[in-house]
Image (cartoon, rainbow, N blue to C red; front, side, top):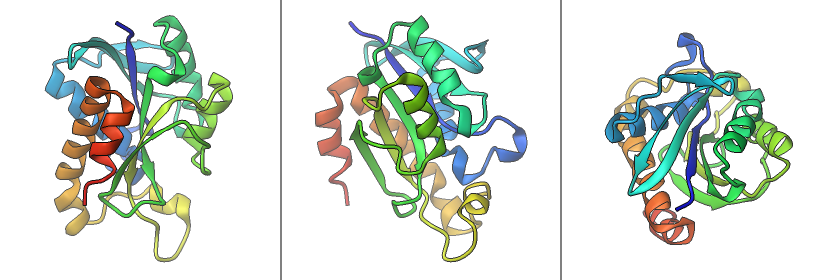
Length: 190
């Protein structure tokens, strides 16, 4: 049974913890918590843990390289654990989806996301799987300021736990059922 590498993208310093850009970290933290996988090992410019999810061996990884250099963590980890790109699932923030929307995707470009750009460059492949977690676009102002700001009080913060729970369910479905079946389930929800 082939191992899966589940990666949450984000930035490592405490000041970034509740930033929109860190939604991938939040999802992997919740997944680790639920599945009893301790993210306590440090290597590959990241923190990681190993265990089983839905009956499959997995590695959970949070790169500590900062978002724009994520590939420098993901690539050595995937090589060490012999995980091919098609068994890497990356949870990341997505500006092009409304807040709360989720989409699973297999392969594709980086769409201007610097964490994905780094991964494509370092891995030499874009064949990895993505869980795109919608954070919406700013009405006005800088995109970089927006992604590095905390989720807005009120509706966003109220709905954040549900969004993280649904992200964890999408990751579990992908590992359990494969990307195609998981896409049919996750991408068609209203």
